[in-house]
Amino acid sequence: MALDQITQVTGTGVHIPGDDIDTDRIIPARYLKCVTFDDLAGTHFYDVRFDQDGKPTGHPLDDPRFAGASIMLSGSNFGCGSSREHAPQAIYRSGFRAIIAESFAEIFFGNSTTLGMPCVSASREDIEALGTALGEDPGTEIRIDLEAMTVSYGDHSFAVTMPDSARQALTAGRWDPIQELLDNEEQVRAVGEGLAYV
Image (cartoon, rainbow, N blue to C red; front, side, top):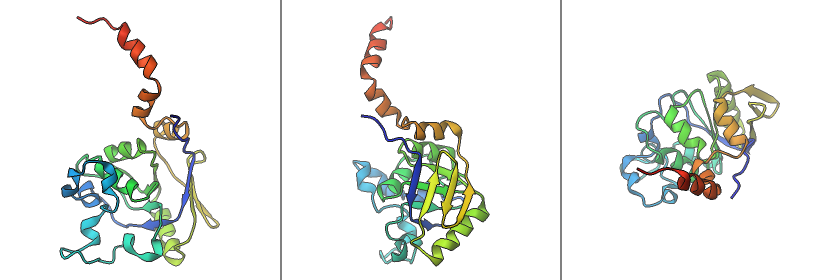
């Protein structure tokens, strides 16, 4: 099965300000017992979205103005903390397809890439300007171009960065190593049969 070549992501966004947002905040540990990642939809940021009685706290993710947002904005060192794969899975399963932040924790970034969910870095000023635009018009369309390495919205555009190896994997449709192994099963089998066993 050929993977999609991800050259751009377009959608509306939601700004979740803050630095050092760790994986425990993104997906509380009690949700790690799920049988499949599909069960993680809606669990993202649960403990900051709801109080101990299950009442909404007014988090931006639950603001009806940003319903259907598929691009998340945040601060520096996003996804830090424990290296739980469930964190990007929870974000992805909840409908997000890209994240724009100042910087990312390395393992979170890698786990996001293998989902086909680009994580691009931008300056604080550019992210805050985009966040302000979303506050004024939540329907603002955002376009992340992984070939030009830009984010554009309205009449505005700014540069973003990401490691070239990840960008190439996404744009070439080679971002899921497990799928690559499945697609090349015959070659994998041939190599295995050619190995000498002691």
